[in-house]
View 1 (cartoon, one colour):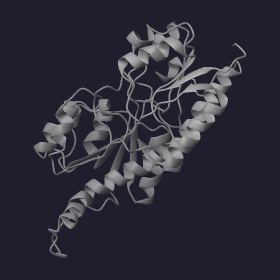
View 2 (cartoon, helix red, strand yellow):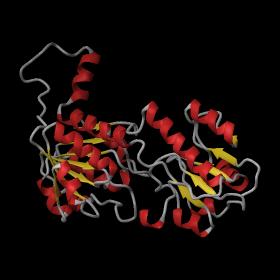
View 3 (cartoon, one colour):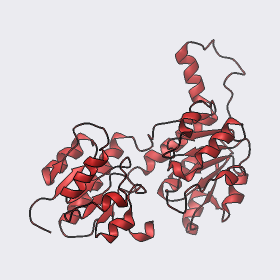
View 4 (cartoon, one colour):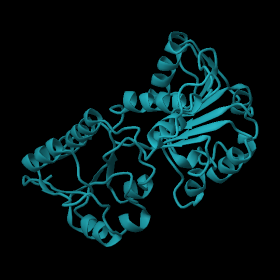
Length: 328
């Protein structure tokens, strides 16, 4: 690598402390406002910089990577998910890709439990009644929800976040079940008091709550498709803090509207569909604007990981959080 400082382009506003450190270390171009870059701006960035720092709002696809200049050697993603980046095309062009795993594990698991409670205890309905002034006082039959203690929780994806959800769910007295690409080691499974299901269909049909905690990959796209959603009990609740593409959103919307599923807590949505608009009108759905990782601490730690990945690369070494083919 040349001795001069790397040219780095950041596509969105980041916490001040992160931006300040980037300016100290690199020749960095920061975003003046907090809007996504246009396609033309992204093309200009990849043609002129050594390192691009995108977020999940940026589509770093094959067409964009194909227009990259010779200088671009690292895409240091600000976030753990990398399904918005065509990693294979980047590798073919000799461009490394890194991410920021682990730093938002607890934040996302907390949000999963918050959504679970919000749906089962009808918290948004109660909040709306108080805020609107329509609440007439306590009633023994008003806003009746359900107790989560004793319920079966089926976790789809038992990585860092899935395991963090399992630990929290046990404290609430839930029975933890899971389906994963690979079964956990016995000592981890025993520590979580979790029951493994090799068949996702069999697990889904028996759970009271399904929590989606797997990444979006070609193999998980619409993993919860219409057929599988129909296996859910009518009293079941589904929570998704992972990626919207894992669920067939149109099928989910139809079933929620028909009360074939009791409720849903969603923090993520499928791109390119209009179902999110229809979901907003349903009383049994709690929707959040992708807040799972939205803590000050988590966002700063994400930035610190980005900086470490870039600095390690600048020093001639492999970024510690490089995305490798086994992760795809």
